[in-house]
Length: 307
Image (tube, rainbow, N blue to C red; front, side):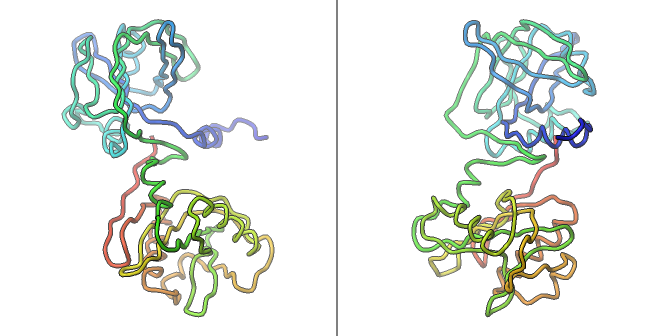
């Protein structure tokens, strides 16, 4: 166990997957304020209570610490830009996001999958935050997927599922395993490739990939999907995931290549070369996107900043 170093502790807290909300209120002069939060919890059904935790570092903290009403909007998949606006924008946030007023005149985000209008029930000081317990006076709810957040980045369950959601043909699943300043690759007859396996049962795919990594003497933790594509004109689907790990046993087909040297390598296909060069570029900032498409056309879904 580690002593509670604030930065390390924040990373540990961030390992818990949450949804993403926007919490809003109005100042005494009527000006709307809001912030992005994943510190949202349902508390009770009778009475109907929830809680949020505004931080004392917020410019709007005094408003939330003294408000009598506030609202919580649970963001939907695809609303990453809204989360970013309320997490980082210094301009008028409400001029950039479509909102409607709730029963108390507090803005709620249009298109959110749930909106809760609250009267303050109880307030508790808690270190560098305070805890606001709200009594839900009214709410709206849509049966859509919500936006997720883990380890400093947003994720979409629909997007992550699509990485494995392939019905016909075979799926090649691979792990781009970063080990410090190197990436672990496997030698093939046609060139280098990420450590990978082929499987027809998508439900067992990630388990099979983990078994493959272990058989190659690699200990790794799989992370987010990095590239998902189909072979043009074929029936083979590729899903590659980011991973961090190291080689615990030597294997003749596993090679540790410096990330800065990826450009000079020969890869098993042009698609893999393009993918690995993108990895090398994005590894510099640790802002990894997610490619969807085929071997000829597609788009990279850009990541968003840490809240």
